[in-house]
Image 1 (cartoon, rainbow, N blue to C red):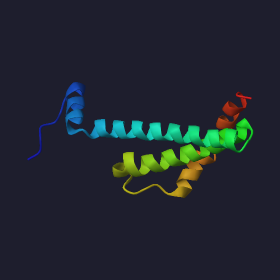
Image 2: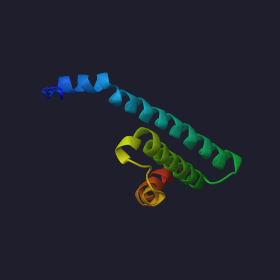
Image 3: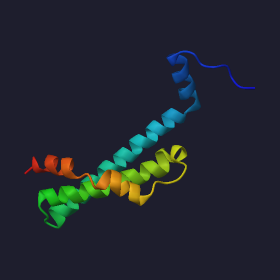
Image 4: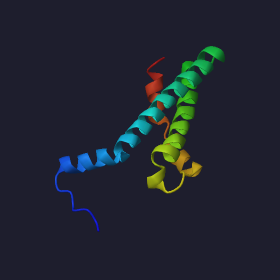
Length: 111
């Protein structure tokens, strides 16, 4: 026997909150974001201060590593149930890594 249909937005949000799916996904997404920020900062610091790379090169390297890690973590942890399987690296590079132009333009403002 199936439950009766939920009619209002408030009832739907209450049901989602009680099932904890939305809350756990939000916490997981936030955790991945915090880890992503730490990775970005660490890679940038190593490249800029440790290796002495120019700021644009250090930022590009940090962004590439952080976005790749974020994509991998979100596709395997946060959104694994919707995806059905971890995302392929080909799709990742097509969607996230190749369109670097806006990121480079934003980084150029720092110099």
